[in-house]
Length: 136
Image (cartoon, rainbow, N blue to C red; front, side, top):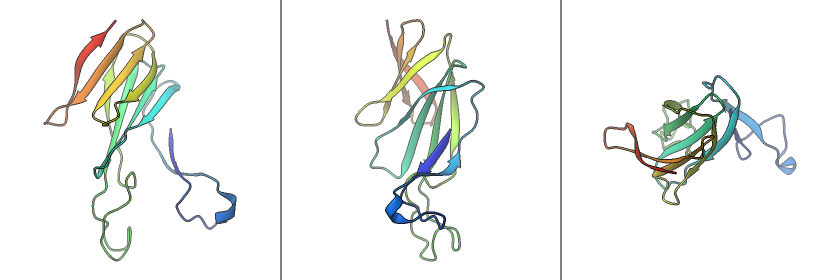
């Protein structure tokens, strides 16, 4: 899975072309990815959920921490959301996964499975993901 950005400067393309190019590749699934969902957030932390044929969801997260001198600007200001190092947490399921979708607030993840189940997940205060409930 690749994170792409159309707004970042790329010397190979002009602004008029309005094309996308890979910024970072997120690797970890053992089979093809069926769905990807970016969590809506006004916070500095960004989340991406990827649902896969390999019966896992990976929840990728990154913080827009202040950039070091030379790695994001001399100002040392915050990076743009999604520009930090991405780390993943893996959720395992009993069947293949079809879709992943975030709530409007961005704090609850719904995952639909091939066995006609939908489960809801939320990050606890320790940073671990917990199943809130199953919907059958």
